[in-house]
Length: 123
Image 1 (cartoon, rainbow, N blue to C red):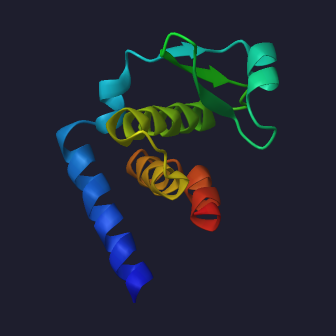
Image 2 (cartoon, one colour; image 1 turned 180 degrees about the vertical axis):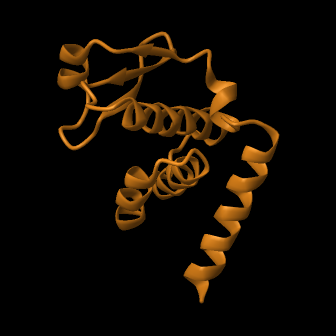
């Protein structure tokens, strides 16, 4: 029951964000630089990820992306990493479960069925 309520809350939250703007909160994070240099991303990011969010010595956040095979998956990865940046700037922490649920809502909203199915299993 607790999981159902949490899912409904996250779904409602995601829908309210998307109702105002297709990118929602991560759209507010466009100031975060994105590096598509996959060799740097491979050295900085965990093996199990498509990319990561790194804070440098001066406090700036940068998104590093690995080679991602499809534009759909790249959009979802960028959305998720921008949501991570939003969480980090807001609270100083990143909740990967929230990020996953937001990526799922983003994939569903934008008609990315294959990605949505993968995220349903992951989240």
